[in-house]
Image (cartoon, rainbow, N blue to C red; front, side, top):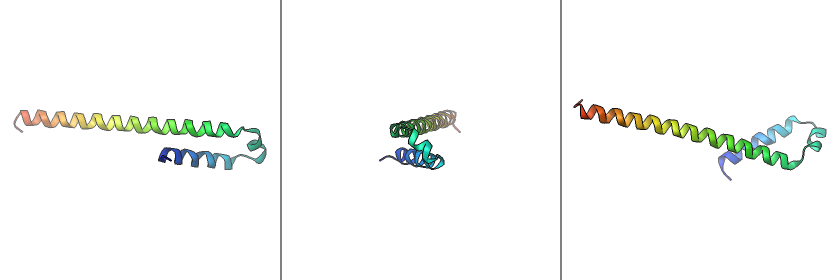
Length: 73
């Protein structure tokens, strides 16, 4: 089980706690699984975005260092 899955399941479990017994009976359990998958996808997308931004910053830093080295600084 991935961390994203663990977090998604915790969020879904918390959401279920907010619902009444009647509301829980009205919602197909499969919908909670779908909700967990959507949460996982959102977490994965956020992590990927953060990794891409970090990679871009590292690439810019490497270019800056190269430019300084080429200029003899």
